[in-house]
Length: 88
Image (cartoon, rainbow, N blue to C red; front, side):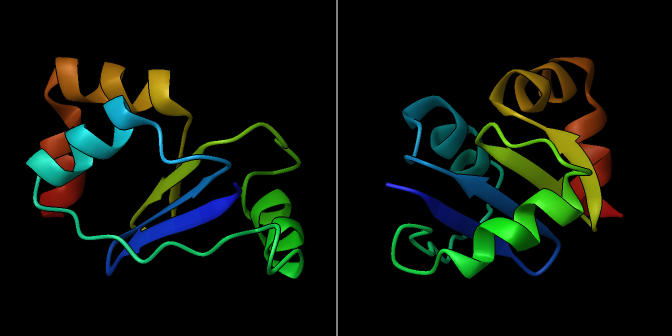
C-alpha cells in the first residue's frame, strides 16, 4: 500500500510502512499521518514533484528538504545529522 507519513516538519511518501524506517522515526518522536496513495493517487504526482521525479518509495522529506529513501534516512541517523534536521 502506498502511503504518506508526516509530522509537522517531515513527510514520508511510501508504498508500505517499512518496519525499520517507521521504528527509526517513532524512536525520534515523529508521529505519522499515513495517506494511502492507492486511495489518493493524486498524491503520487505531489511526491514526484517534491522528489524531483524520483518515483521509488519511500521518499522522505524533513523540513521540506528531500532526504531520499530508507537507506538515506538511516545514513543520516548514523552520522548524527538526522537529529539536527529534526531539531531545526
